[in-house]
Image (cartoon, rainbow, N blue to C red; front, side):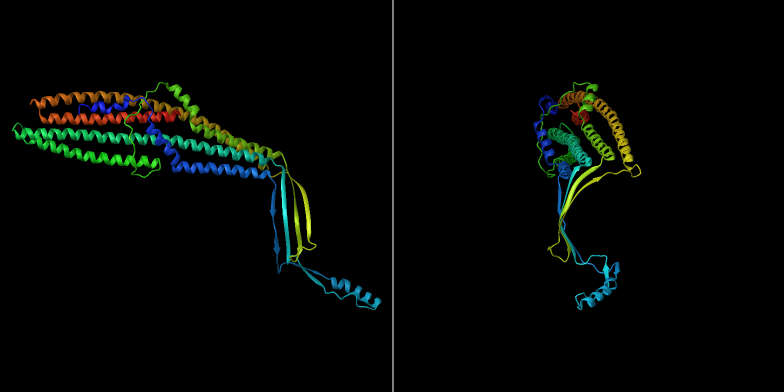
Length: 444
């Protein structure tokens, strides 16, 4: 028990970053399911850029079609009434039947037994939408990359915090085990006193009660440790019961930077700013596309090459067609102007959002800074309280073994020391959590 103070604060003697924790962070970054989904979103955005670039190339398509029709609108064509009198006169003059008698015709508007088998070709010569559409897709891909960095940023903190919580649960179990060894030692000591008639049996009952009570606390501590381990394994995408290597020699560094320096670091390094700036760039590219589209036409060349006619045969049905085209929207109720104004307003919204985030982050840094300082002071007080309870316990132990103190005084001193040990352990890991939180909000 006398060595407990040294064991509790041994981690503060280390002066190197935890390689174990860093390895777990890297494992989490490579296997976390949310990050995997975001990487797929980035891959999807890159494919969208390739899709936008495909509009720069000619489009060639094979487009055959065949039509069978029945019914629909018809037109009467009196070809018999028009030609039969003439043909009859010609037959009389020529004394022959070379000119046939024709029936009036009824022509169907829908083509029946008609086909068109063709290759179509189209190439844009100038289209501002294509150029700026590629820029928009590129900036959207950058936005997805910024989201990935933000997820990584948050995940690192969550893994680190979960690891500290797991280590604290192990230390709590160690403190309870050491208290159990202490109580078992005094149960054996009291049994010997009772056997020698140097003490009454009530000291044995008191020892047994304290041991049983401690067993319940140890069961709760083990449960808490399993929950903390399961959550940590969840963050790095492992089975809940997977073993976790506990680093008992971890660095607890102090901060040398001022609050103003940390706030400046946050404004420079927080990934939220990269995300909102990529949003602004997307909006700028969209604005340029809309402005160019409002005043510039688009040009293209194209054509068809194929066969067309009644009956699915290619004899004497070939044709070729070439075209050059221009598309220029001249008026549509100022639709394009209104779109441009909306995009400009969105730009102002994003700028205002950036200013708001700056103020929020400054406040977050200040809050984390003061909480870290408060955690430092709390740890110092907890250390002093632990030292005092250790000294008191040593004194009461000596007095009890010299028959100058009651056993209840030993139990009270031991219980005070156990509470102080747990409080100091919580304070130490709380300081680590506050340090990790401060590093998170400052982008360190």
